[in-house]
Each structure stands twice: as structure tokens, then as C-alpha cells.
Length: 330
Ligand code: ISE
Image 1 (cartoon, rainbow, N blue to C red):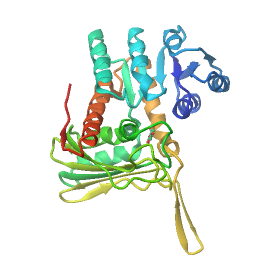
Image 2 (image 1 turned 45 degrees about the vertical axis):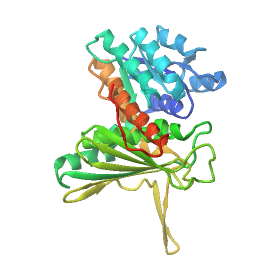
Image 3 (image 1 turned 180 degrees about the horizontal axis):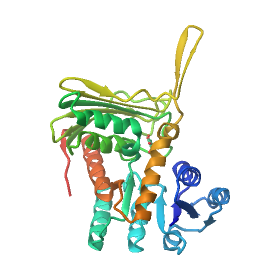
Image 4 (image 1 turned 135 degrees about the vertical axis):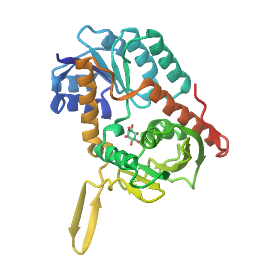
């Protein structure tokens, strides 16, 4: 069976998903595309032999769409996922599931009320499919570094999307660190606090960088620095420090150039080269689960809700002078 996929939103990520499905994922074909920019939708549709429709609602209802990918603006996710649930269509929604806890809670409740044998909603926390993170998690679970005590993570982008603010740094970028921290440690985040150094002059629309402290229920403490206008390159770091050792991701370099008595590392400009294989593996796993009618191996709507609950606690802390803030679970 070939899974016929409709893609909502063909900006940076949606276009990447369309091309990944077309070139390196088996068992799926992109049949329908929509974007608020009709010419952008038409160009990518022509590239892969898909058709376009004017709205997300039309795409979700289309008879030649078996499953939907949502890569639209974060603020549109909740409404579009909800429509997929109305039509009983499996959906892979890019992170965050939605920027607010209320929206995520409603989606989880709506999916639960359908009482289906398998969830329809998957969330694109693709780092769970990134081989180095999987190896890091395996090493931690093997016990080789003893009980984990500290995690030190960094998330750096070259420049932020226009139109964001300090809260969207958390709901759009740091949300990856939130999900991967509890996934790596196998322990939920129960308490957070937010800190700010002097802010970069390159972006006056938000506090940047931000420093986040995440305490998991196992007692480990994670520090995250998230800097979305770091200029020098796309860079993700993670080290887990345990009682008897430490383990960390290899650097995010795509190249190291040795020349003229110097060694220079080259960073990617954004996350796509670094996580290309993770996106491929995530899409392949999703398509295979749909074809085999087995439960999604991706993050679920409830995982999306948990991450947004932590993001909400961080935003509360940000608005309360960095107060230590418990994570409220729905
Ligand atoms: C973007 O949406 C992503 O998902 C990237 O992985 C992340 O690094 C970036 O900060 C986000 O804006």
C-alpha cells in the first residue's frame, strides 16, 4: 500500500518533508499540497507531481489524502490537527503540537474521546530519531556514567525567524530541548526557572539568549542555553554528567578544514543538514506504521501536551522574574 500524503505549509520544513518523502522515503507519495502562498504551493507541487488546493480544510477532507503533514505556522496547528481528528486522518504535526496548554489539552481530549485502538496524532520531535541522540540515550541507560546528575544543553540558531518574541523562543525552539530532556532521562520535568543575561543587539524583539533550568522528577538538573541569533552557525550541544562519567554529542560540524597551520570547523546554516537523517527516519517510521496499521512510534499528542506544559511554566517564570515554577500537568 502506498500512503497518499497531503502537506499543509511548504515553507522551510514543509518543503523539506515533501522532498524527503519524494526522494528517500519508501511507501508514500505526496498527492496534495496547500500553502497560504499559492505560487509557492504550485512550484513544489509541480516538482513532485502533486495537485494543490486553496485551504487546509480542503486538503484534510480530500479523498486522495490518507494522512496529513502539518508544517504551517505554529499558531495554525491546533485548528488543523482538530480537523484531522474530525476526518479520522492520521496526522504528523510539526512541533509544537500547539503553543498553548489549552489548545494541546483540547486536542488530547478530542483524540481520547474517539477511543480509537491507535492514536491518530504524531508530533515531529525528530531528535528522538537522530542517531547521535539515540546513542547518547543508550549510553545513559547502559549505566556506564552512573546515575545522571546534570544535563547541559545548548541550542543555537544563526538568526531568528522574524515575528517571534521571547515566548516563541521557548515554544518553537527550546521545545526540542524540553522534549529531549525527559526522553533522554526517562523522567518528566517537574519544575523550571528562567534566566536572562544581557540581550544581543541583533534582535530587539526578544530576550536572546535565554537560560533555562529544568528539574526532572529523578532529581537531575538540566541547563539549557537557547540563543536564536547566535550568528556563527547552527549548533546543538548536549552533555549528560553522571556519578561516574559523562557522555556528550559530537560537535555539530559538517566539516573540519585543516589548512595554513589552523583547523577550522564549519557549521551548517540551519538544522536541516544536521538532522536530515533524523527527519528521514522519522518519516519512514511514520509511513511504515500507517501502512502496517500499528501504533505510531513517534511522539504522541500527550507528549506534545507535556512539552507545552513545561514551556508554559517557563513562560510563567519569565514573566515572574525567574521564579522557580512547578510544571502543572493537566
Ligand atoms: C525550528 O522550527 C526547528 O524545529 C529547529 O529544529 C530548531 O532548531 C529551530 O530553533 C526552530 O525554529
